Length: 81
Length: 185
Image 1: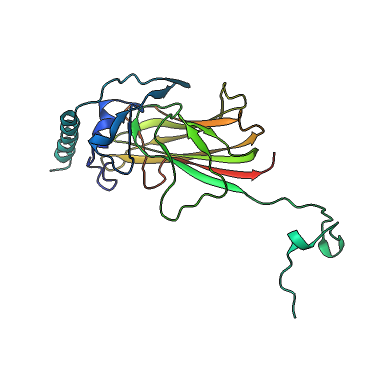
Image 2: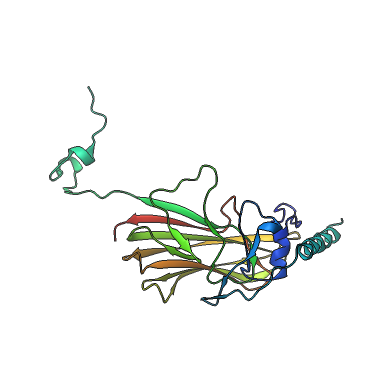
């Protein structure tokens, strides 16, 4: 997750949470959060119901990296980078 | 030799004397027999009610479960034994802005089907300085688990602003639950 001291995005999870809302993704290994371990969840919780994940396709690795760079550039611009 | 300790559980039988402050008790109940912690290991934005995935048992160095662990499937937690259980849900959020409310909920069922909102905890986020601002709250309930097949619990996080993230970690408790069995039902 983003550096808690600065808030600067520094991990693909920072990008993933901005691509879609809700619990749409999971990891095959939560100790090793790399793109290759990224998976879609089967179910999500919505208004007290458990329903199929509305997200049906993982974003590409390049799209995730591009989103992370976008967030970093925005943070740098807002913080004098 | 001075008497410094009595093995009262194994060596005393019958009724305790009521002299010198004794209670007259004829039986003893053991103390807390089960305690464990689970946590969310991955962030998400927006709502998740219930939180259905990315739960894990605390595995931080030094952590220890007392007794049998809870089990979890699709965000639904099953108790290892009947009894009165203290459930504490601690939830952490972050957002780069202001948000009037964030909500943590504990939902219980006694028929493994229809859930009741046992408790809700609220907080808010008021951005300080710049960037992400963090907020957290805890909410608790005592659940009388009379049947482990029917009595279940699950947890939720809702936010006023969909860009607000519920914060998870695979190395520490940011959003997580503590289960403590207080005694027999």
